[in-house]
Length: 112
Length: 112
Image 1 (cartoon, rainbow over the protein chains, first blue to last red):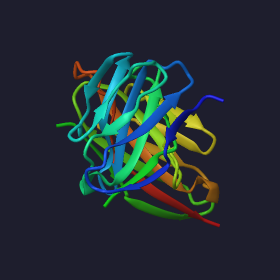
Image 2: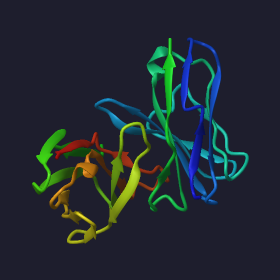
Image 3: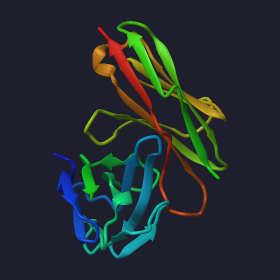
Image 4: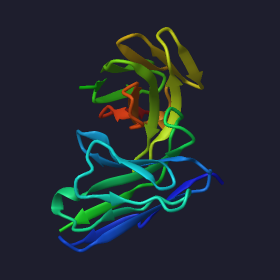
């Protein structure tokens, strides 16, 4: 089954404790993105990747890092999480930037 | 700055009561307008892509249309299972591979 998977689905952590949210897709997509979704603000892009070892900033990259060492995986790293990073995070992938994106199920992160 | 505005924020319909959701945008160089459906606790699911003014696409009870300034998602004789948040997003020709700018969504509730 074609899908995008994210782990963990739920995470509660404390300020400053490094964490990684994993994302994996099995559709051989070149393009992958991370978004955060906050009430009233919609989905905002954090980082994207056009292919292996090619990443770039989206609209709200501050406080986040990403890597793309393999085509299927695109982890999101929070080196020192802060409460304003409490949000619902989605990973997405597509063949090309202008194609429809397939979204993962989401990761609900709470930073205390 | 590219802007995408969806209205209304929330809409309650009786089963069978047709209506339309609006997505207005102020962007230059539109490369595509996307409609997604999002169920509670899940990632957005792709519905349609529209590329040029005058284009229309249909899927079951949904029909999406596009003008130079806005897009409509028409829902004909909705059923309770159509209840969801509907998101629109635009991609512009900015020379960047950044993907989509999303609206905040319309939360649709269809009552039996």
